[in-house]
Image (tube, rainbow, N blue to C red):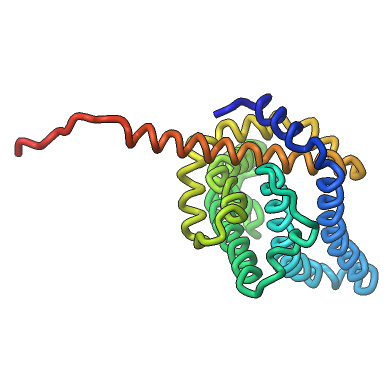
Amino acid sequence: MPGNAAVKSTARTALKGFWPQAIAASLWFMAVCAVLFVLLFVNSTLFGVRATVLNVVLTVVFAFLIIAPCFLGLLRFFRRAIYGNTDSFSSLFYYFSDKHKYKKAVWFFIMLVCRMGAIGLLTFLPYIIVRIIELLPFKFVADSLFLQFSIIRFVMYIIGVLFFLIVNLRYYIAPMLFVSCDDMHWTEIIYVSKHVSRYSSGPFLVLIVGFTGWILLSFLGVTLIYTMPYMLAAYAVHCRFAFSHYNHNIEVMKDTDFPEYRSTF
C-alpha cells in the first residue's frame, strides 16, 4: 500500500483543473446539510423544549432520506473525477434519478448504520452497565469507593471508544464500494469491505491521523470549501490504492504454488 504522502500527493494532482467543480459540489452538499440545521432551529424556536423529540426524529429521517443519497452522489462524483471522468453537476443527483437506485442507497445506509450501532452497543456495554449501576436509586457503591468506581467508568468509556473505532474500520471502504459497483448487493458490499479493509485499514488510520490538522481547520466552517474536496479526493485515492493492493494480493495467492499435504489417518 502506498503511504500517506503518496495518497495526498495523488489527490492534489487529481484535483488540478478540477478545483472549481470540486468546491461547487462540496458547497451543494453543505447547503443540503444546512437545510437540516435550519429546520432544527425553526423547530426549537417554535416549540422550545418540546421540540427535542421532534428534532431527533427529523434528524434521523432527513439524514437517511436526503443526506445519505446526496453524500453517495457526491462521493460518486469525486470517485469518477479521480478516475478521469468529469461528470456534469446533474450526476450529484444520481441516486435520486431512479426509484430503485434511491431505495438501494437509503437501505444501504440504514444497514450500515445499524451494523455500526450494534457494534457500538457491544463495545460500550460495560460502560453502560457501570453507568446504570451509578444511577440506581439505592446505594450500590459505597461512598468510599465512589472515586474508584468513577475511574472504572472512565476507563470503560475509553476502551469502548477505541474498540468502536477499530472494529468499524472494517466498513470504512463500504461507501466507495457502493458507488463503484452498482450491481453489488449491500450484503456483498459489507462482506467485500471487511476483506479489503484487512489489508488497508492500518494505512487508512494513518491517513486520518495525517489529516488531523485539516479536520481541525474544518471546524472554522468557511475552510470546508477547501478541506472537504481535499479529504474526499484523498479518500477516493486511498480506496483506489486499497482495491489495487487487494487485487494484487489475490493474484499473488493464485500464482503461488503450495505443496499439498494429506492426512495419514
